[in-house]
Amino acid sequence: MIRNHLIAPSLLAADFTRLERDVAMVEQSRADWLHLDVMDGRFVPNITFGMFIVQAIRKMSAKPLDVHLMIVEPERYIEPFRAAGADVITVHYEACPHLHRTLQQIRDTGAKAGVAINPHTSVELLDDVLEDLDLVCIMSVNPGFGGQKFIYRSIPKIARLRQMADERNLYPLIEVDGGVGLQNAEKILQAGADVLVAGSSVFGADNPTEAIARMKDIGQEARQPFLV
Image (cartoon, rainbow, N blue to C red; front, top):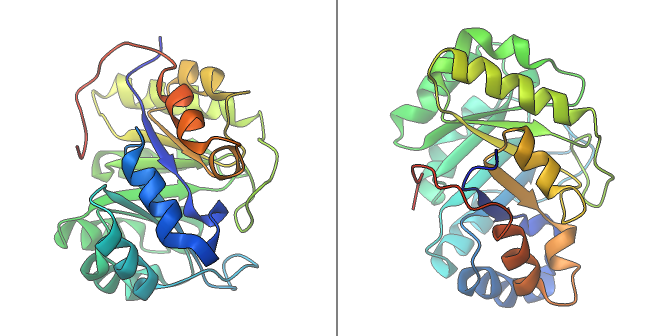
């Protein structure tokens, strides 16, 4: 079964010399969210941007901002990113020794709380916090750089997480981030995903708006909307 799903183009793959143009394209497209990857050069090798860029993008877009913190000590920056305009704040399981407290901190700001797991991290490790999650981001590449190939071992992880949630009547959105495109989107959605993060497959396409529309058109079954 393919559920009604969300498309979240990742600005990591955008042209930052023409950022306003690329945000406007997403804003006018059928995309649901904007996905913003914040990297610190410590948790991952790359450095991207901070809350001031998020704040600037907030002024350009009315779509929900899905802010993915690939940083150490994310609890220090939850409030500033929320103040900058983040609607969803996702932290990494691997970066949070006090994950439950960090998730509560996110929810206390009024944002939706997400957790991301790296390719080597089992979904079973989320069992004790599943009730506290609005979103789980399954990394289908190693975090830190765009343009990587999708790790197909992520498919059974998606299915297992969906099973875990369904068995407990829980409804966190399952987001998949990394190497997602038209070549694998249907399999990802069939496994139980709700949100497709697409970077290079959108911004590297000859017609990004059409690429978003084609991914959005996969599957027809409706589901209760989230952050619309």
